[in-house]
Image (spheres, rainbow, N blue to C red):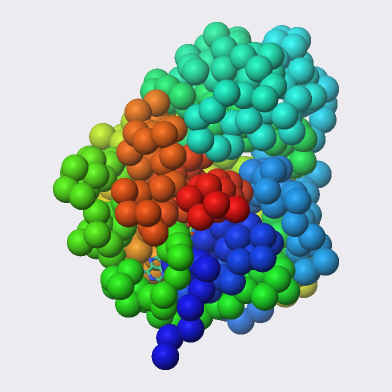
Amino acid sequence: MNKTYDAVVVGSGPNGLAAAIALARKGLSVLVVEGSDTLGGGMRSAELTLPGFTHDVCSAVYPMGASSPFFRTLPLEQHGLRWVNPEVLLAHPLDNGTAGVLYRSVDETAAGLGEDADSYRRLMGPLTAAADDLLGDLLGPFRIPRHPISALRFGRAALRSGKGFAEAYFRTEKARALWAGSAAHAVIPLDHRPGAAIALMLTIAGHARGWPVVAGGSQKLADALLSYFKSLGGEVEAGRWVKSVDDLPPAKAVLLDVTPRQLVAMAGHRLPDGYKRRLGKFRYGPGVFKVDWALSGPVPWANADCRRAGTVHLGGPLDEIAASERAAFDGQIAEKPFVLYVQPGVCDPSRAPIGQHTGWGYCHVPHGSTEDMTGRIEAQVERFAPGFRSLILARHVRGPTAWEAYNPNTVGGDIGGGVVDLGQLFTRPVARWDPYSTPDPQLFLCSSSTPPGGGVHGMCGYWAARSVFRRLGG
Ligand SMILES: Cc1cc2nc3c(=O)[nH]c(=O)nc-3n(C[C@H](O)[C@H](O)[C@H](O)COP(=O)(O)OP(=O)(O)OC[C@H]3O[C@@H](n4cnc5c(N)ncnc54)[C@H](O)[C@@H]3O)c2cc1C
């Protein structure tokens, strides 16, 4: 006979594991069921290119992970996790050889922004001082903030588009470009709101705790979460793709770390038509095309700060980045795509044989695009690091269709669990007082398709677990 659990969680991404841990910490019996043979969802690492080169398959840099109000309560260091920060968190090179640079220190960052220094310091100083309060208030469902003054200060700046914010606060090309690159993480056009909110959160988190990578690769974060979960008595079953929630062992609550489309496929027969119709209107966003490289040496960036940076944003000035993001959103291919490049080796030498490096880079492409972007991405790296191509020992590429085959949550290559704009920020997957619950009292959604959305922070899972406690009474 099937064993009975208090809760079964389908999916072992950061949100599935966060939900599972939050439940197990309250003494509930919890089983995590994962389709893939390797646990961790968007936190897996693998030798994608050559032996000895450890690549982060999905996520690589963790401003939100290191600042996550939930992860920070967990003893993950005791379970093998070590965040490592580069000296330079983020560099954004321009064609004239200069670069906008994000450091841990607000003052140091401001000092590099010339006539925008005061504006940057005035804005980011108070917000960074209130970082923990703000992230606690913002990374969750819509509710009355506990720290209304900080939230108001944040909200006044954040409700703008990425471009609107850059033009309102900064005058220099360097500051505007640096800002635009962070706003582009929202994967919406730069003139859409609330792109500024995403850039602000990433920047505040950076000043508070950095933009670290995980020593040894992102899999170590998944392993630490799993190890802690198991230490609480949690159980895990990998290699089992769930087609219907009816196939799961009996449980009081079932939490799905999946997106709305999969929720309907797995549990549609238990959900009312009205709710399913609303789920059907959920909007997925552009996809990503990613390249991982094994490199024979460090990237020869023309700008010296880029050589010390963990993350390098490649797209030149604001208008160029805006054109690239607009193209991906409108179903077009950008000839000069905005590229997010990560070089973990600057602070974690374990990723490649001595003297060699891994490179990680992707750009946004139209939803479901089949275009090979390898050449265009490498041209952007070469533009700011002449000689890059000559270092390539091997590469691994993955576009939207392959992403969805790798992880069905990546619908059409969308890595954010659905568009994050004003229409879907707090009302994901549908407008509902408790967005984690469903009309079926046993079923909950805990993926990045719920607030606060994409990124490795586990907060969607944490809040979904709170919803379970409310329903089960605990
Ligand atoms: C290329 C790329 C780069 C990224 N870079 C970053 C970054 O640098 N920093 C950052 O913070 N975030 C980054 N992200 C985003 C981040 O990885 C996601 O936002 C995050 O992983 C979402 O977590 P999740 O738990 O909601 O879902 P996932 O991590 O997608 O986990 C869902 C899990 O559910 C499993 N699953 C799905 N359906 C079933 C089923 N039917 N049966 C059983 N199991 C199932 C999947 O196999 C998967 O393991 C990146 C993502 C990608 C793809």
